[in-house]
Image (cartoon, rainbow, N blue to C red; front, side, top):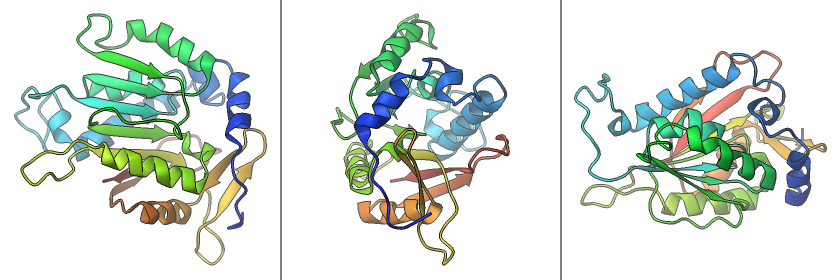
Length: 250
């Protein structure tokens, strides 16, 4: 671990993922056949609904009398892979989802699979695809949820700051004061902080990605001007995996 971070090579990262099987098990590194996908999806849905109870369609303690939204709700899945998070999380809470993914074979598989996703088959919900990296992504309209999971390690710190600033500007604003109501959700592996408690990173030569420590993420968030509004340590994942933390930002 070091604070002298090597920078991810985005092209090498795409090349690596181009040789990975376009399946849930493939994108989850061999952990897609057990309980992880379901535990992960349920945790993410609850995390989002706690922050945005207006998205719930069933009574909850935070929204005991839900009513239909007066507008179509939208989400972005960043680094979408084959659309696992869109299918299992976002389409359960919003009407329209935009998927951004640079790996051609993953985009093609997501487009094929999406025909059977929740709400897509009966056209009550929509999905759109952008084959590009997050460095190139340009927001279109406002988003209630912008979610990035297990993909931000392919961005350098300056690239991540730039992406988060774009995302912040695209969050939905409600109320007369124009305050942000939408939320950015970052869900990523976390390595240990440095021995002195400061930021640290681990670089993976195989896929040319960086695993950041909690302090390393907080350092990036501070550079964006975003406010950390909720943070959660993922429970129920296999012990051999990195700890996973979910951050909510506005």
